[in-house]
Length: 198
Image 1 (spheres, rainbow, N blue to C red):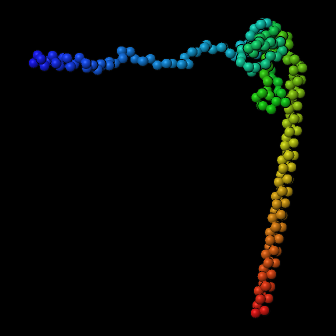
Image 2 (cartoon, rainbow, N blue to C red):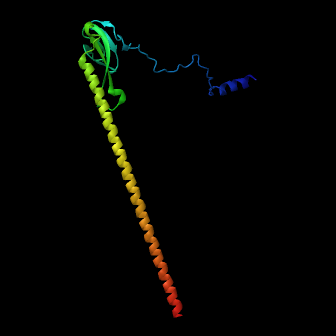
Image 3 (cartoon, rainbow, N blue to C red):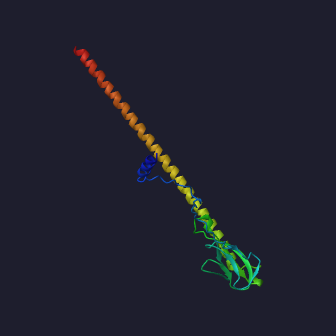
């Protein structure tokens, strides 16, 4: 028995037993992206119509020119509007008839007027707004008249083309019928000649 155990021990020296793999002691961590967030830029209108402002006061913070600088208002490189004089804020709109886009045609302005001129809006701006409205109305009437003429011209051309096509088809049909009748008469004549000869 001792000899057998020694032989087994010697034979097992060259054999390597497989190692067992254990489980992970920590869970694998997943990667995350787009987790950074910046604070809001506090955009929007800061001073509304009728508010008293001093020179340098910010009126609007914006991205792009949603509001345009009017009288006594400056604009910064980031499109921030600020007051140039002491006065009251006044909002206005100007219509641009040359622009086709409806939203872009109406341009909003922010003005700062002196206190004595606040209730009496500058006459040149009022006259300009009235003139732009008149121009737009005139242009719209001219455009409608032009569209009406073009529509009538198209209707007339379409009717003339349809009449011409109908007349052409009728002429071709009559020509085919006349040719068919002539061919049938020739065949009848040939049959009569063959019958008389026989």
